[in-house]
Length: 197
Length: 235
Image (cartoon, rainbow over all chains, first blue to last red; front, side, top):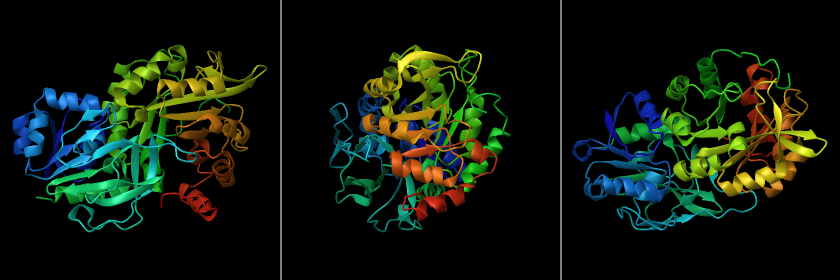
């Protein structure tokens, strides 16, 4: 089993790498277009701002490469948001692989932003990525921006509104939560990803 | 103990694994003598902890620059927490949230009642160097949010280590003006203290150390108590 983690210059690739290694996978980190194109599976992580991350992907030529990938691709948190057309965060044009816009979460009493914490998924649909994940399992979210639920949504989460927790179109998956920090439920999801071809 | 005579509570990795297995939702590692000793937290152990943990964790201790934070985050921490360095250089908060996003940036506040009201204290890891920063706690809570803090940990020093419960009154006042996640710290001694701080102060999370380290409260039991009180907790 192997997965390549895209190093788009952001921080915190280690936790993802360790999580994949705990599952017995080889998890190389690279920003080399040729290595990414040839990888069995690709993970697009993301910590930082959308504008920063897109600038890095454009500078390294990966913004053109990523939409052409045919192997399973998993975007995590900001990495998932980057798969969409644009983000309200810094009015950023994103990769445009998935249709839709990333919006800012609205804070309210009892619902602070950033949204940080463990939440249950709702309305899960069947998908190989979610195989064996029981309804009501908790995943760890940390974000201020989100994608509203749409026909791409495999599982949602309620945070004032219904937002996308897991999305998919074709070979592109995304999770708004951090599976690498979501205990055994997250490990299960990453294990499922490592089984995708 | 009240911030004096810090006890060594066992090997960090064993503790991290124990809390992971018991169902802790997040761990916070404070290298409390880093700032008073003008050091920064050791990246090597952050990496070792990251290898075994599959839950989020936050690291604090002498993080004085974007470069310091980047190294700690690259080593596998989810968030960095700044306290004394932010009081010394409030601009640091904006620099960190600009670079990593506010969700990575926790501001810890050590609050103690003085003749002038609640004040933020610096260098509380070393009794010899602990000093009042001159900042009013509520004003500081407002300022750190404007500067980009994504979470505030309010450590109520008067209650810390005495296990008589969280400082509900102070936390409630801070909650009123805190639009980012607020974590209660200081005073946990019994499961009902946790119930009270969630129900009466409306905090987003409750932090405790000694009651867990000593085994006085087991996390699974605590979660059962909270669930029975109608507070949603991860199972």
